[in-house]
Image 1 (tube, rainbow, N blue to C red):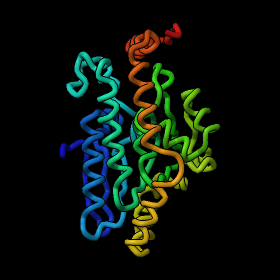
Image 2 (cartoon, one colour):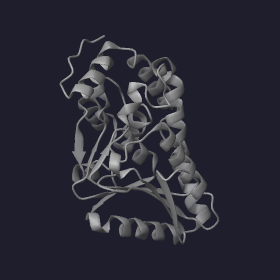
Image 3 (cartoon, rainbow, N blue to C red):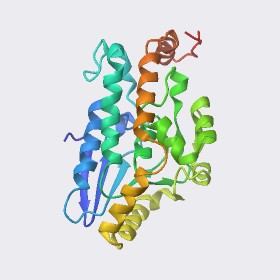
Image 4 (cartoon, rainbow, N blue to C red):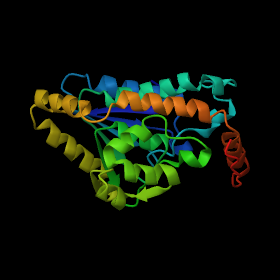
Length: 264
């Protein structure tokens, strides 16, 4: 485990912290793998009843590290577009490990929760947000879609209409609106975020452990087929990264200009 992911145990709770504050906790493929491993392993420790996931620094996470798209990221490599199905599968495996944690997981969100950062939060069972937090999936503004569970898990959580609004526009919603949509479970003052997370973990720990874990398994198996949704996300993304629109988005990000969409 690198120093980009910090694991701390507090009694019956484990806190997994994203620790790349100088990069707004931008997520790399390796980092997502470490997060998945840390959460999965924490959930299997004797006596652990809940896992908290939080971000150190100014915000939870700004999303994927855009340097990956330049081909400079060793996890991607220069030929990454032709390997997008495999790369998306690796990202999905990391967040599936979070979702598959045997004990409840709670995401503690503050300031900004964007793109892959929101997909990480959606892979958790519960979400608490600090006042003023913004949550969004801006991928369509880059010529892409949320492909690491964002499209699938968001739709399951808030319904198709609200998922369409967020994804089609790439816009963010404030914490209060997110709470009214059940995207987050509660909104609290930022100073109370960690204490409230620990309190919620303690409430979970006060219940019968086998019953809580069984309830988590049953709830996870209800509703739409997540695996099928993830496969659809991966296939669509592997096609989108080959488009001229995506190239235009990459140039726009690099030059801080507005992309001109060609529709091909």
